[in-house]
Amino acid sequence: MTPNGLHWTPRSRLVYISDVIGAAAVRPNVKRDSAHMKRLLKTVIAVAVTNLLLVWGCYGLFNATVRPVAIWQMIGVAPGSPLTGWQVVLGCLLWVLSGPLYWISDPKSTLAFLGVSLLNSVLWGACLGLVIYEIRHRLQRHAA
Image (cartoon, rainbow, N blue to C red):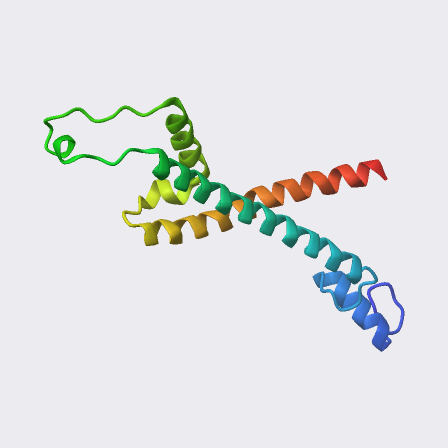
């Protein structure tokens, strides 16, 4: 007997079990959920790739515009060359985009920076992508 007093059938058991535990055994909107997950995954990947490209673009521009250090500057005889306004902006943008993992780990080599920036892009993609997806989902739901 079911909780409402009816007799069990194989179909009613499956529906009852899926309602109780939230399983997706019998759900009429599985295709809709799959479409939502695909859209979420696309949003997360787009944010992660954008972050990765921006970080490496800023890193490349910053390294291309900084003048190489002369031997006299290394030993302290000559003063170092000051950074221009654009280099300061690129450095600040790189600091913000390279996010929390770079601040914690402080990689010393380019290979370590590559690994940290990949992990950091995944983190940015997951966090910011979920927020963008939820805002877009709510706006579409209210518009409909």
